[in-house]
Image (cartoon, rainbow over the protein chains, first blue to last red):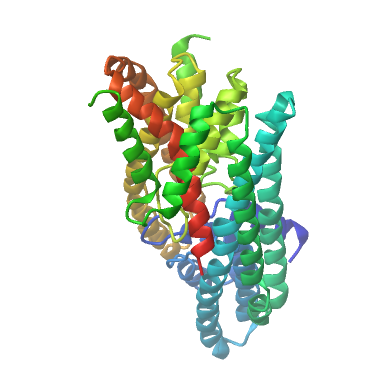
Length: 255
Length: 202
């Protein structure tokens, strides 16, 4: 795979979810990203190319930051199947489909818990904390400065995972799945989640002592924070906030 | 620039940013904590944008976009709220916050239907593959255009209707006080709930 082909796959993979639907999920975006590669490896056999295109139109879903690996692996497996003797081809393609499904499902779980379940929260709390700190320090750009922190903190690992995954998936092919399974993704997600909890708690204290918020807002907010943390799941944070709103209305003379 | 042009321009900007929610990337530049301050700065009110953005960011952190799950759209909510608060309407922050939440909910309902309608592209792609051609690029472009148009129209409608609706509610003082309280405490309550869920998750 040339650098140009890899770059094209990477850029096309950014539109993975642009035609997302409940029936085929990301399949159309995946098939579009892979299409130039399919034309390259199956282009001399029109029937085989049609079959390859149809194979990748089946329902497909993974975490968007894990798609690089699945794409790279699919490229390698399609290439190997095209180069294999005709008698072996059907078995190889059936195996490629199974591996694609297994890799997309397995990687989705790990990437979901890292990106959506920990990094997003950690960065949001870090951005709030930074904004409050800069406001207190009298820094004029307190409102916009955390934007760069958030954007870089997210896109650094997210784009790296896509690019590196593409490289590893193509280099490793079938064996690459085993290598990826050995990555300590669960441990990394756990550490990041603990960091997110620390940053969230620090944000609460910073907000409680911040001059950016009115005193009433701080103490009512602190109370809402405690009540929501203790409330059962069925009440939820909106139930707590709504109840406090109703109490305020009753206090002021009823609705 | 006239107020109407600002509203259309704002709606188009929010619709463009919304594509980053899932369709393109996602680079998470459409998250309220990013979009709020940037849109606020563009309107000359970065502080208001940051405050509304942070509030809606905390309120939307519980929703995890996994397995195609669709919750209220935080980008649409933040964009609409900041445009209403820092734009020509000059809605108070609590009014802008609730109008933004409403826009986010309406977008969720509209997007659910839009996603379902994309099944037709899948069937067309199957037929194309059998005929030996691929029009996937055209289907993806159509999906993006439909998503952009739907979001821009929805945000435009909410921006146009929010001011008269809020003016009508302004006479109801106890309701105003209750909404201000909910606006004040909801981000804190959501933060408490998110921290507990982060702690309890296996």
